[in-house]
Image 1 (spheres, rainbow, N blue to C red):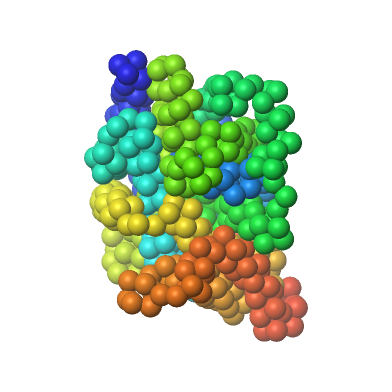
Image 2: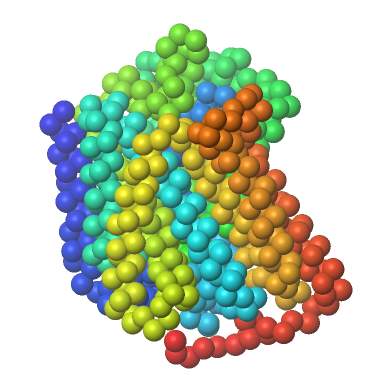
Length: 501
C-alpha cells in the first residue's frame, strides 16, 4: 500500500512543479486560453488525446459497453481513434488553425459571431457551453469517486475535493501553457499505463491469458449475438463518442494553438496512435468484465465494474499505483480542458463581449481564473447527484455537439451557409438533444413513468439524431434562404487577416 501511495504522491508533486514553473510564462489572456498559438505537434496531439479520454471512458463507458456488448464494445474505441481523432484532425485541424490565427479568434462562440455577424449567436452559444459542460465535468468527478472508493478506500467526496483543488491549481497558475505541458507528461503515462494494464488484465487468472481470451471470444457473453436494438444502441455510442468531439469546444480549441500546418500534419499521426491505443485498450478492458464477474450473481453496478475488476486482478502494488495515476492523469487533463474552455468562453464572450466591453486583458485573466474555481465547485455539486456517468456525459456531449457541430464544421467549408440556416441548425439540434436531460429532471417535479425513464437513458441515440438533424437543417434552410448561391457577404472570414487584436 505504501508503494502505491508513493507513486501517486510523486505524480501529484510533478504536476504542482509544472504548474509553478510553467505558470511564470503565462502573461496574456491568449497565453492563458490557447498557449500563445505556438504549440507543437506532440503537445497539441497529446493535449487533444488526454482531453478526450478520462475516467468517464475508462470507468463509465468501458464498464457499461462491456456489460452490454462484450468484446463488441471495442468498436467504440476503434471509432474514437479513426472517426473521433484521425478524421477529425484530417478535416478540421488545419482549417480551424488557419481561420482562428488569421482572425485572432480564441473561442468557438467567436467563430460564430465573426462568421455569421451575430452577437446573439455568440451569447447563446457561450451560455449553453458553460452550462452544459458542467454535467460532463461532473461525470469525470463521479468516475474518479468510484475509483477512490473501491481502490483507495477513501470517501469519494474527500477525493473529489482533492482532485478539484489540484485541477483548479493547474489552471489558476497558468491555464493552457501549464495544461499542455502537464498533458504531455500525462499522455506518456497513459500510453505506458494502458499497455501494462492490458497485459496484466489478460494474464490474470480470471481471464487465463491468450487461450482464455480466445475461449471468451467464442462464448455467448464474450461476443454475444446482438439484437437490432442492441446494435442501434452500440452504434449510437460509437458515433456519439466519435463525432461528438467534432462539436465540443474544449476539443476544437486544441487546434487554435497549433504553431503551423507542418505541426498540424504531424499531430494527425500522433493523436491517432494515442487514441487507438488508449481508447481501444480502455474499451477492451471493460469488455472483459464477464470473465471477472457473473450477471445476476456478483456483477457490480455499471459505474463500479472496472474499479472492481482492477481490485480483484491482484496487481503488484506499484502497478496498481501506476493504474491509479493513469486514471488520475486522464481525468485531471480532461477536467482542466473542460474547465478552462467553459470559463474562458464565458468570461471573454459573455462578460467582456456583452456586459463589460472595456475589460482589460489582466481583468479578463483574473475573471477567467475565478470562473475556473466556480466551475469546479458547480461540477462537484452535480457529481453528487444520483446520475450514472454515461448519462451525464451523453447529455453534455449530445446538447453541445448536437447544437454546434453542424454550423462550425459546415462554415469552414461552405460559404453558402447563412445566419438563418445556422440558427435553425443550432436550435433544432438543441431541442432534440435536450429531451433525455429534461426527462431526467422531470421526476424531480413529480412527473415519472416508463416512457420518461426510457427516454432519460437514450442520451447517445438522441445525440446522434441531433447531430444529423442539425446538419440537414443547416443545409436545407440556408439553401431555401439563398437559393443555393455560394456568394457570401463575409468573404473576409475565409481570406481576411487581422494584424492586431
